[in-house]
Image 1 (cartoon, rainbow, N blue to C red):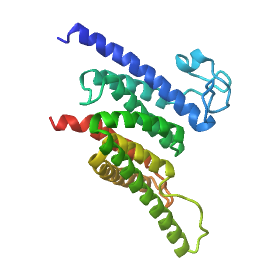
Image 2: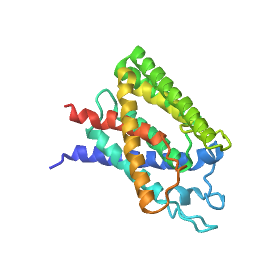
Image 3: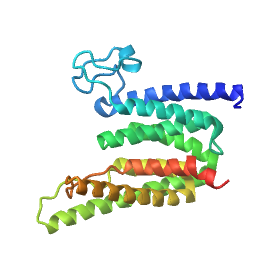
Image 4: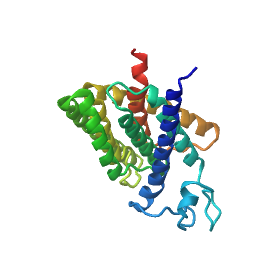
Length: 259
């Protein structure tokens, strides 16, 4: 039988994680659109929500009738389950709250980038503070700062190479050049944040894993779009989630395979 004190901890962990999920959903709804915090509004008609309606129930706009999407429940339930699991499976070198804060940051970045193709500087700044504190705890000052610098520098190189590739490709087809980017500068900053977290030499594995995950997922997306006859050459896939997935796998999953 599971000890009663552990059951209590799991329940408390789930509740706190659920509240983290509520906060993540609020930030993901408001920051990409308004760049500030305020009373939540309906994404469809911009009518302000009643706070009880938005945060608890019925989570439905009283004006246009639109219901908050499945992402709302997925994030809250996922964070609740994640917080409960962290009670027993906290990564080595992390406290429970630090591990939960980091998980919340990774989820927030992933949700915003998938939905808006955007990595906000204000979110990256908060993530950088979290990653710097946790990175120093895990690796010490020098490896942490080195990891951040290498992560930022490597992705900056990919950023400029992507711009060059797009420019050459459009020139070869006699198309008008644009400011389109293969990798956004937000990805560059995010890579620096992940570098602080993984340190040196961990960031090298983090970047390689991100590239591998990106390749597998991108291939799957292309195949699915070809089958559904929706494929087009300018199909864009956000890169930020691959960096966050890589960090998640290395921080939360990898340690259990090394025991």
